[in-house]
Amino acid sequence: EIDRQILSALLEKEDEDQRRQVERREKAVADVAWMKLVLEEQLQLEKEREAELQIMFSEEARKMWEKREKQWEREKAARDRLMKEVLAGRQRQIQEKMELNRRAQEESIKYREQLIKELEEAQELSRREKEKEEELKTARRRELEAQIMEHHLQEKEEEEEERSSQQLCKEMVQQESQSMAEQ
Image (cartoon, rainbow, N blue to C red; front, side, top):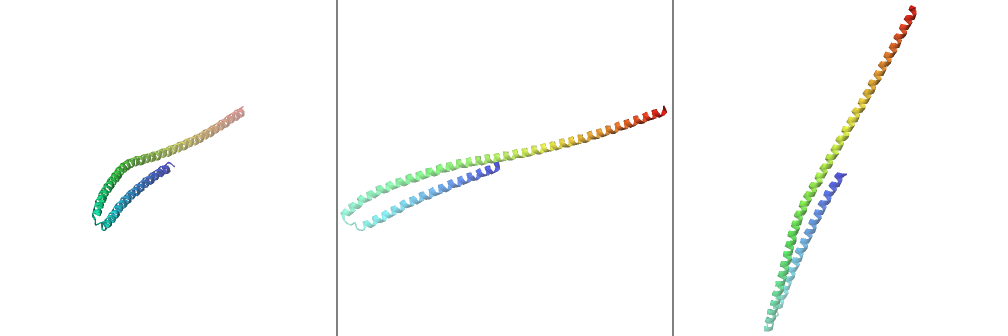
């Protein structure tokens, strides 16, 4: 029963580790998809702006273009800052997860070693108990054999005493009969 519990705990720990790895992969895929979407939107905006340039020929159009260009630069700078922040945050998350994963692996190794140690101790305890039980069985068997042997010896001694007693009585009767015959 102890062995099954320990093996079940090992399997449960491995399932938990796999689940965490799947979650990390899914988060990374989502981040990549988001950044791809941002880049696609930026490309689309640039295409639209190029199309607008085709209809701007006048001085007013040039001024408007300069104004919009400055606005685009500000937007681009804001997007770049946001992208850097996202990438920096993602990098921190990756580093933190790597550190957590390293610690989790160390804990998992320690946990496995502890479970293996407990399993070995349980097996050793079971072996000792079986050994002790066998020793007790052997001792009881020898004690019983000794009792049986002692009982047989006692019976033989009693039989010998009985024969000796009968022989003595027989001799006394013969002596008495002989005495009476001589008188």
